Each structure stands twice: as structure tokens, then as C-alpha cells.
Image (cartoon, rainbow over all chains, first blue to last red; front, side, top):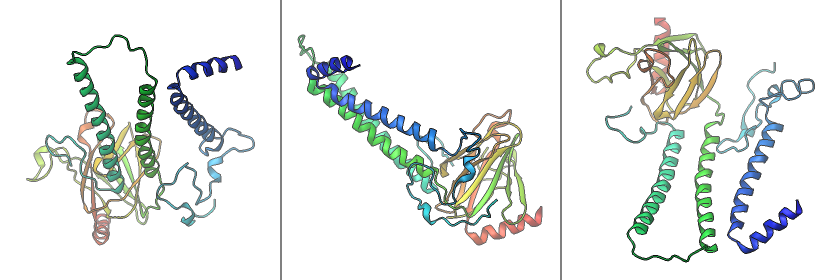
Length: 85
Length: 230
């Protein structure tokens, strides 16, 4: 593993133009893996653990933001006007 | 509605469609710039008498043509993701309407306060009055109050259909046994046309959608009259 890194480091010294490539590809791969992990762990649409967490979609608060970004909506201002079931 | 030989989008009638139009202009401008640059380079390469047979590599130009495309892609991706999340936001609708797709007509149900339901069939070409649009008009329009957030629940009673109104930036598949939600706000009063957007049989092209946005008093009068007729 470290020998592979040494080889890559040597190639980088001779071809520094590869550094932006590593940055963008590495950054893109990291961001996609992080988003996939967030979906796997925090997505309320799927129940992974049927014994301990059978229906996570029923546990959402009325003003909870479950999407990653909120562009135009202040979710804290939403009022709860439905009865509990 | 679309006009003959139209190439671009229809005029936006909702804020989301305006955002989509502006993003399309932005992305298309980038595409035009890149294509023009590439075409120029091709022509320049092909029409020059200069040659250099001894170039092997160049680190500087490699850095530039890695960095610049990455920046351009980020400039396209950020507005795109912003609109994506904007389209999915829950906006506290004032009215919920159910649009059910059938072979080959749509039916609309306004059940928030009373039970109002009606079918919306296309007006056949031979029954059109002067000024009406061929294959786009329906006998009953889906009337909504203007500038109010509307939620539309789309489903189907038999096969797949799709409820689409291009000027509102709305398209949602109608799947039997499934309830799909979409929402929009009309920024101005008017009549907005759409067509079924999922192949559904012989008359798939002949089950249009007409949304009519009117001020609230007109909407209240209309729903009162529709309830009486039913």
C-alpha cells in the first residue's frame, strides 16, 4: 500500500499537472461517498432495523428538515396543525 | 401553450419554472461558448501551415485544461442542485387537488371542504369553437386560485399516465396504486395547457390538461356552481 503511494508520489513530482486531477476526482468521490453514507444512515424512507426502528418515517417532527439543503424555506416556522395519531 | 415552430420553453407561469428557464439559459450559454471555442480550435488546427513534430507534453496546459472544466462543471452543478432542492420544498399548500388519470381523460377531485369531482375530456376537433386550440382544450378545466400554493396528488385508475403542465414547470407520473405529490404556485392568472406525458394507449395524445388560474372570488363562485351541477 505504502509502496503504491511512493510510486504515485514519484510520478506526481515529475508530472505536477496531475495534482488538480487528484484534488477534483478525490473531492468528488469523497462527497458522493459521504452523501451515500448520509442516505444510508439518516434517510427516513427505509427501515433497516425492523426490530428496533421499524417505521422511521413515522418519527418525523412537523418542522423537521430531512433534506440536505433548504433553499427558500424556514422549517422552524412551520406550525403543527394535524392531530397526533 | 406552445405556438407554431416554437423552439424554446413556454413563458413561465410559476416561480419554479422561472428558475428553470434562467438555469437553462445559463447552461446553454456555457454550452454555446464551449462549442464555439472547440469549433474555432478545430478550424485553426486544420487551416494552419505551421507544424511542430517535437512536442511531447506540457504541465502548464494540462493544469489549465483540468482546472477550467472542473470550475465550469461546478458553476453548472451549484445552481442545478439549488433548483433541485427548491422544487422539493414543502410550502404549506392552501388547496389539495387529486388528479386521477384514466384511459383516456383526467378527473379532478377537490375534497378539502366539500366533495367536488368532475371529469375532464378533450374537446374533439369538430366541436371546437373559433379561437380554441386543437387537441388542447377540455370540457372542464382545473380551476385554481392564483398566487396560492396548490398541492396536486397524482395517481391513475388503470395504466400509467403523467400529469404535465410545461408553463408551470410541473410533471408527475400517475402510477396506479401510488400517490405522487407535486406542488406549484401560479404567479399570474391565465390558462395553462399540458398533455398526458406517459404512453397509455390509443388516445394517449388526446387527453390534455388545462389549468385555469383565477382570483379567489372567481374560484369560490366556480366551485359553488360546480357543486350545484354535480
